[in-house]
Image 1 (cartoon, rainbow, N blue to C red):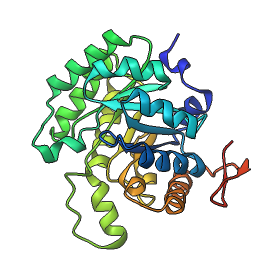
Image 2 (cartoon, rainbow, N blue to C red):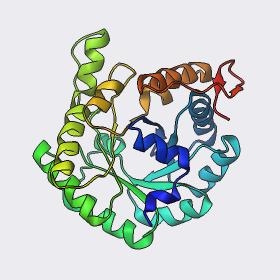
Image 3 (cartoon, rainbow, N blue to C red):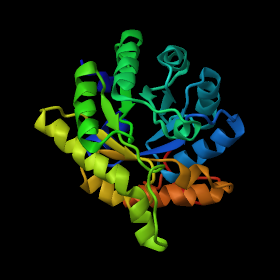
Length: 267
């Protein structure tokens, strides 16, 4: 039986239909109040998945605040994953690595493969997403993605927002910001297909409602968006951004109930 069968049906459908929207709270963000705001906004805006720091207490807290919203826990230490899965996380992710680059830390292909093998040893039946570091040249990103598939990764995630240097204002600047992760998505999705691997590719880092459709056109099965949501202070503004991202994936939010923000959201 596929590991994907352990995921909630709506999450599996989102991947199959190439419209998954993941909101990223931040690998280093362990503030329960801040993450709770992001979780409520993600659920009210129609996100399919919330990515948060790998902390069992945080998983437990967010489950009570946003019941029914699947949670992915992210870390670069596989030993942290089992406790978070036991607390209720639906899946785990190695990376992304954006938070570590300003500290001077760099992840090579061998590092990511080692983390992947160890995670598979610890959690053989849990869905595993692995980020391909954007510091690698594109051809090496392609090679690593195929190696990760062989090592047992279920999803591949791209990144690149921290390396982008947008020079233009407005829409053009948003496209420039997303260019590295869009390029990685195109290259990796084609490399996996050529190697006859059908792993979903999640495009993340540096995206906006303008560039989400480009990510899907480049071969992504879904997108991960962090700073466009989590840098906002106002929860209503967060909901509006998530709804805009949801609409950009090509799937409208189903009006199931009226949320506290005065917009319809999923039950």
